[in-house]
Length: 325
Ligand SMILES: C[S@@+](CC[C@H](N)C(=O)[O-])C[C@H]1O[C@@H](n2cnc3c(N)ncnc32)[C@H](O)[C@@H]1O
Image 1 (cartoon, rainbow, N blue to C red):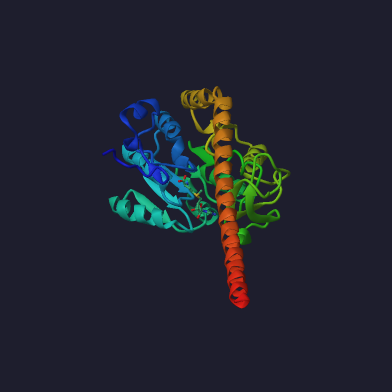
Image 2 (cartoon, rainbow, N blue to C red):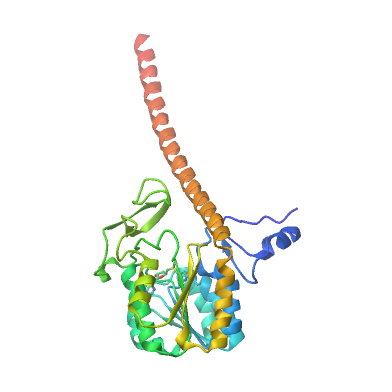
């Protein structure tokens, strides 16, 4: 009897058939969800970067279920580096994962918001993975704090959600903390609509009602940070899995390291349209999935309503039949 795999939850390359494993090459240890939203998906890029600039201390902002953390722990172990996890509201899965791995002493959890953490602790890290509150004010301030703390010491910043939909649209985990916020609400987002709409990907967290404009979104924050800073920044992005940004200040590295990082970034640029094609296809499938769910729910409601109509009519009929005898 063939092994049954619940591919609607989380799969690894071990779950694939022997042929599929060769045809769908996955990096070691990657657990893939149906909605591949984790920064863990960029593991091959992180491995390449670590080969040219080995990490000594890694900081992950925004941990959630610790899917990226698992990848980063592996990277930390291979390089004898420390790993700091910063999240004020870790998901239960993240807490479970941490319980299993924290005893090794390499990982430390900080249950605070990124801004207060970075304001006092940023100096000692050489890799920053930014994936916390996806809005202009937070990301701009995170970058400013890292820049101020690090000065000309070498470090690399990797940012998630620099692609659609958060590139040009704020999302607020903690609205109350953001002074520069846009009108926002939970709702559906579509790459075919500028406003929060009735059909698209479901966001339960408040998102800016309007896409675009000044001081809106993660990518806008990166661009404004670079423009307002006097560093010699290089920025590249990968438009896949909601977008990965790679940012470094060339003044912090010698010529050889700069060339090596640049070579990785440039190699990714060659495949931008391929990534974009795959990403739009993924987004459209997610939207279709969401639509099917909504259609199913409304059909269930209609079935229940018609059931009630039938019940009432049956009762009426049986009352009339009884009265006519
Ligand atoms: C998209 S999830 C992170 C996913 C994870 N990095 C991965 O790739 O697997 C975002 C997380 O950021 C956290 N978060 C929200 N605002 C934050 C802030 N200001 N500082 C740090 N973390 C924050 C949330 O609690 C949530 O768990």
